[in-house]
Length: 144
Image 1 (cartoon, rainbow, N blue to C red):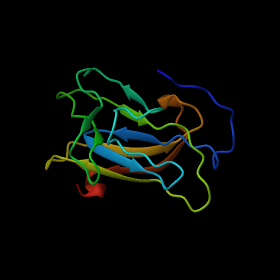
Image 2 (cartoon, rainbow, N blue to C red):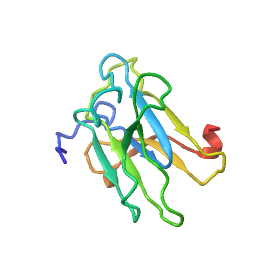
Image 3 (tube, helix red, strand yellow):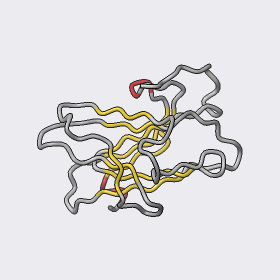
Image 4 (cartoon, rainbow, N blue to C red):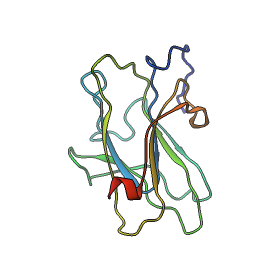
């Protein structure tokens, strides 16, 4: 894992978005400063994945099912009774005034299995050190 600890700056200037996914697809694009897709080599340079829980067979992969572009990050559901918490972490970036983080997520099941999707901001590169939820929704909220 290529994860480094950087100097601590105010939370408004140093961002590590965390994408906490259960059964979700994701593409990410952050304005001109940090344009990112999953169209090419998977994972893009600087991205880190954390796959936790009892079901080690489910890992982040690239899929051609996208909202736009040729590729997206994807992780399948866990086995019945298993609770996996899987993170996809972007490289560090510093947003400037007027920029926004945009992404697309999708759940491919008609039944609500209790999936949760969250985007987190943090100043270090370990999932357990996440500090600020930017957005969190359950399947019922995102309408997938």
